[in-house]
Each structure stands twice: as structure tokens, then as C-alpha cells.
Image 1 (cartoon, rainbow, N blue to C red):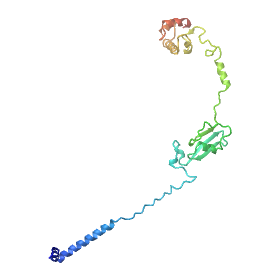
Image 2 (tube, rainbow, N blue to C red):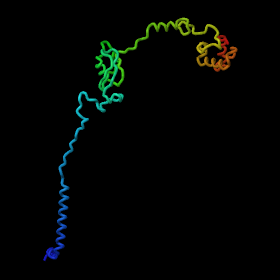
Image 3 (tube, helix red, strand yellow):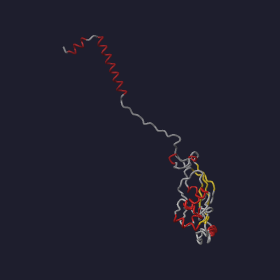
Image 4 (tube, rainbow, N blue to C red):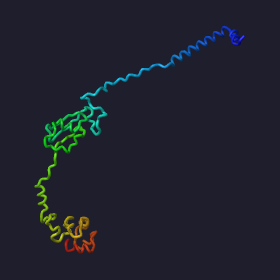
Length: 233
């Protein structure tokens, strides 16, 4: 007889029942894993739009992405900038404009510039800042002719700085009373050497003779010879 028949016939009923239970349990376990591991259709999640991100309207406040740089943060919470439009416009005064407006918007809100007003100095594309003032047609008036004439008369002929002045001293200069400007008029004496003379006078309580001029820093024998007939103590 074949071997499998012998084995089948030789099994005890208890052993055969145990094998049957094991086979049934294995079949159930395999069926469960097959069922749970099968591919399933998954629906894509529906993206809900938040209430804050609604379709923009004409009166909507600009978002942070549309906020231009360099604009004070004080105007951002309310979405309004307050500017003062002055000068040659039809309706000068305070204007309240939406945040992000430009100079051209402020001019339009003020009724536009008056005929003949010069607006070349205005950057009409610039973004407005809260609290600023826009002046239209402001010009700088030239100095009055009377002021120029007075300045010319003050430096007229005969004065030390005038075109007709001699520019030099009319007599010996006192070393103990001369100023830096007066000493500067001497030949070979500039502002630095004139200050050295003043410093020596202060340290030594004045000049007692013209010969003391030799002791001033920067005055040699040749320069002293040129200055001696032009100065006095």
C-alpha cells in the first residue's frame, strides 16, 4: 500500500482532530491578512478655505505681501495714512487715504495742482508715509537785491577787504595791541606766525621792545629785519 495511505490509516483520531484545528486556524489567519492588506480607494481630503482668506473686495485692506517697505508700522493696523497736502493745490489740507497710496493719490484727493504749479520736484510714484506733508509748487526765492547791495557797500573802497583798499597797514602796528588779522597784513606773516606772536605776548605779559620779536618761534634774522620798521611795542 502507498505510504500516505499507511500514514493516514495509522493516525489516531485525536491527532487527526488536532491537525484539523491547526489547519483551520491557519486558513482563517491567512484569509484575515489577505483581506486587510487588499488595496483600497482613498478619497482626497477636501481643503476648506478659512474665513479670513476670502475674495478681496475694493474696500479690503492690503495684505502683508502688498505692504511696501519703508512705511511706518503705525499706519498698518487701521489701513489708513493721514497726510497734509499744502501749497498750490485746489483743496489743501488733511487727506486720509488707504494704506499703500502714493503721492499722486494725495494730489488727486486734494483736487489736483493749480495751473502753473511746478511739480517737477515731486516724486508722484512714491508711497506715502503716515503723518508726512506734501508741499506743491514750493520754490526758494532768490536773495533780495537790497541785501546784495548792502553787502557790497560794507566792503566798499577804503575798507580793509574792499577792492579799493590798500590791504596793508597805514602805520607801525603795536605788537601789544594788534589782533591776528592785523598782524597777518605784515609781509611774511601768515595766520600761524601771527598766532605765535599773540601767544608770546600772552606768556610774557607783552613786548617791552621790538627786539623781543626775535624770540618768537618762526621769526629769523631776515624776517625780523623786514618787520622791524613796521612794528612797535
